[in-house]
Image (cartoon, rainbow, N blue to C red):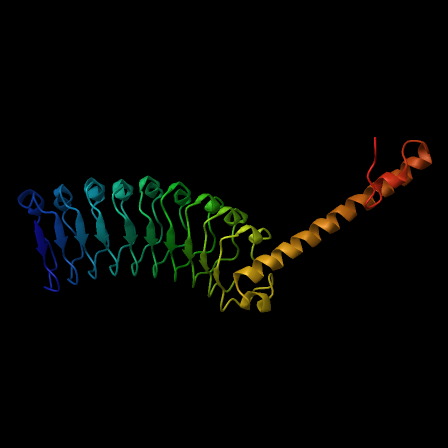
Length: 285
């Protein structure tokens, strides 16, 4: 039920494998020179583990999603430029590790998956899919060393996330929705040169214990000194600024109303008393 061909220099896999190896449950083809796989490999209906690590694959079969019993899939260190649309049908996968490929985009069909880990380090991704918000079991996301410049606006709906690693990208800013990640404990944002500020509501990430933001020369908010003190210091910095901003807004409202009442008094002196709009004064009755 298990077949292993590791480091045998294979540059192709038999076309008839799907018809002749119907009872196969584990297939390991790691460290070879495969550039493609036959479509018939998707007929291995009982396959639970497929190891394609360290080959030269540029694409996976379109029918890969037919391997509905697959629990373990290793596709790291290849030359993959895309994943098939049927990839989302692999609902039994516990984790997806596609590091060290040439992936530019991730299909939105991943929303059907129930895996807890997604790893796309060292690829060429320019964006992350919006479907991450629908992956209710996703706890860890890693996409270091890509070309991501922004995160989807609904990123904060991925409420099961506990770990997010996005180092060595070109992210300019985080969406405000990120503050809605109640379980987020670790956030890595090192080496994102364009980033100048964290969202104003960052203080709402109350579970965050690890914040890494080294080598971000453009960061202004919060200050570099604050960043060096860690996640709690950053939360407190934003919380303090939020209180100051709220205080300033209240005073602007009071000043505006006082000005309005002055103008009203010139037209109708009895319309109201100016004292109602002084700071700290409440109207009774």
